Image 1 (spheres, rainbow, N blue to C red):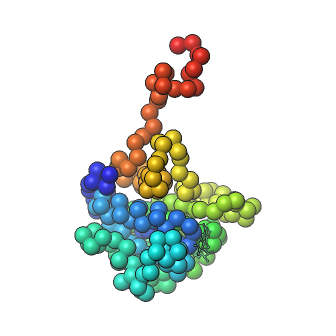
Image 2 (image 1 turned 90 degrees about the horizontal axis):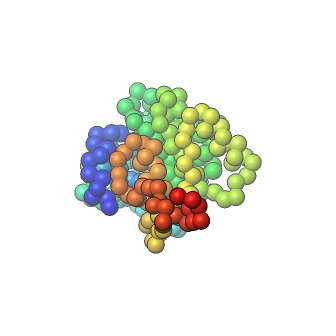
Image 3 (image 1 turned 120 degrees about the vertical axis):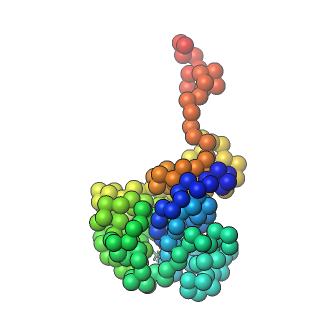
Length: 220
Ligand SMILES: Cc1cc2nc3c(=O)[nH]c(=O)nc-3n(C[C@H](O)[C@H](O)[C@H](O)COP(=O)(O)O)c2cc1C
């Protein structure tokens, strides 16, 4: 249902950092829907993200920025700007750049830890750090299980600093039949947090009493 996103993020500017957590498909789909919705996206990928793309999606990206450009369909590339993760002189590194929000998706536990402790050792970490200091939207989409005490502490630190911690945890109440529907479930939650209108997944509505098993045997 990408058509239904038409221009709902027109002109808004987002940074999307893809790191080496599992779930490259979430980042790819988010990129697609944001561009389709008219957003300007600044895309950065860590070296590990490129490896995960190869393992999970079979994408062997050309090195450098040209490889990242290939992640968007040709007709959507006008809204896409790509940066090397080492390029800390690029605009997302500055608080003066007009950025509406930063999403790290997927977010590895390594990047999560470094952002939680303010390392800013590459452009993704710096863009996340800037979002926190400028009180802009920062959404991290971690994927790991089980979680160690260290992971949990870092997640709490980030939440306390103002980030939205949005784990890649799809729900099943919309009865998904395909992996793409699970991916869309998580991407829909990210779009909600960015304030980008979409109809990727039907929103939950109160079930009618007759169809609601929780009401069985209850007085009307
Ligand atoms: C196929 C694959 C799947 C991985 N899945 C995860 C994961 O789900 N969560 C995680 O924190 N790290 C995962 N890793 C490990 C990270 O990629 C690794 O810690 C890396 O150093 C993270 O670097 P980055 O934060 O710069 O992207 C995975 C690695 C590979 C190759």
